[in-house]
Image (cartoon, rainbow, N blue to C red; front, side):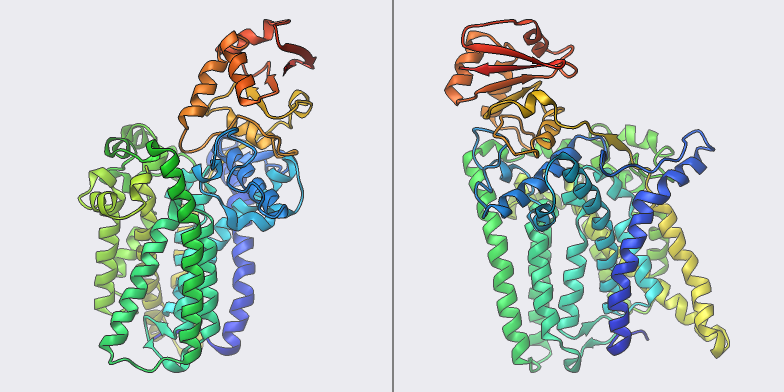
Length: 576
């Protein structure tokens, strides 16, 4: 029977595991994929490592907006959180930040550097670190539960590099899941609990419990995109733990642990309440932000989604293209492949495992229930969340719930790999037992990593145009739509001028009105609206407005209340 590491062995792992997680993430996300893609394409796609200073992962849409988001919360933090929720974008709207997940937990990283280049480098680094933390969290959780090192690494790899995660390349808030498993690992360690040993009072470490609550609060500060479910899961874990304590006839708990849980729990609740209040305020400001059941249906996966990988999966992306097309719109949100290797290992874990039969059945039942929730309108359970659980009527993508079945499948898989290691040790001579265990388990880890290899796009991002840099705020950059505004937001990290441009998961009626009216710029109606809103500058980008109604503005030489300045190929109109 395996058990969580302790003493010097634990301290050594505590130091080496984070380093290994980061090195693995750098290799898996940034360095190896170009060469692996070149190998798969037989030289048709020459290997080229992207420059993090002038490119960004993904399509440059949502990723650019999230790079701005992190820069903004860091800028606000550096100025005493002044204007935190209002932001420089979405002018003159209110609580623009709450239209997205805030990613506030990444704000300290944004205190270093400023401008577009810093925003790109920062985002690319955090993107890689999100995968590193996802691996580390999974590894730490399974080590605490009682898995072997290789088995824990298998679970960490399955959680960090699951193919479905590459459907969210533009959503750092969705990829940032490592804080959940890491918090659960810390809380379990703090409370002296593992799956193989149960509760052991002598293993209680109150400091780890407090750290677990702090990490959980940090995770929630990133946003409710995945954090909402985590809040409810953590509440459910606490409830089950309390019931278990009562059933075990109330074993004595150390006073420091009780105090730590109370203090940590209150801190977690305060952080959760603060962000929940902000999002509730937005719901009151914009009632339409709630998602209708029919709208959720358009983003709901189907059962075959569990076998379909997103386009950015190197092994399965092209092979599953027809399957993604069959899923319809938003196929990247509906591609839920957790990994064929993970499925097989979890299946093996039902028959050979270090976990008890009861534990395996619980894990299987939880995974099945999690999948039924993740199917959204195509499953029997999501309606319960939508109708009765606060917060779920504001989400549109039930498929993101696949995270939780992935965690449970990873635990099952780790139990199988640990059990396989035990069999290998018993089948070999004592002096060869460790090597024998590695021979049969390390290849399984390599298979999980190979299946989790991405083929990510890296888009070149141009610097802020001179016309925008010389504009007097508040300003609007044309064209303004969901396809371009994320780029304008990234450019605004050079000084954070107030601007109308902004893109979020919800487009407010006021902002859409400005976009619609500005299509006739410089009509009398558009100029009246600009003056009413106090907007002083209009920037028209020559290479962006072609083929759009905004293109007509390029031919305007003069108009009442406007002065025109040609700056390169772009035009700056000053409103007076």
